[in-house]
Length: 132
Image 1 (cartoon, rainbow, N blue to C red):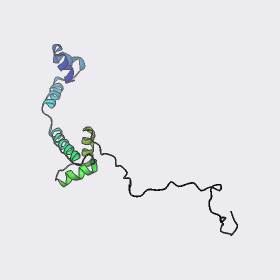
Image 2: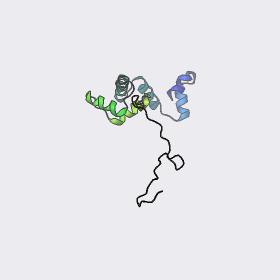
Image 3: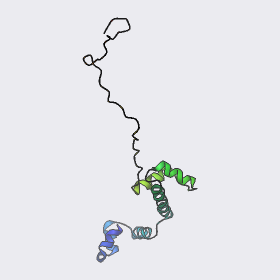
Image 4: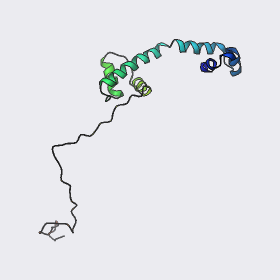
């Protein structure tokens, strides 16, 4: 709403508000809120900066549960869902774990055992003693 008035200053505030059926007190309250954010928004900004620092210090590995734990250990009183929301708004995500590959042991590829590729000279026996 305030952007509309800012884009078209020649229209005048009162005319636009009258056409949109919005009280002038509502408009000026919106304007004041943009200029001086409330305590909750200021605290969100501070927390977002702390969250970004914790996330970058971890190398981008920490997700919201670990970031929340670090904040709690540091003495911050913040909820888990608030940390999740702030991380989502800041577009911070934990990096996915990468499976480790063992370079010391190499596996032989297993050949499928079928009747035609069997290499044992001894016939296979079932539990009752008859060859299969």
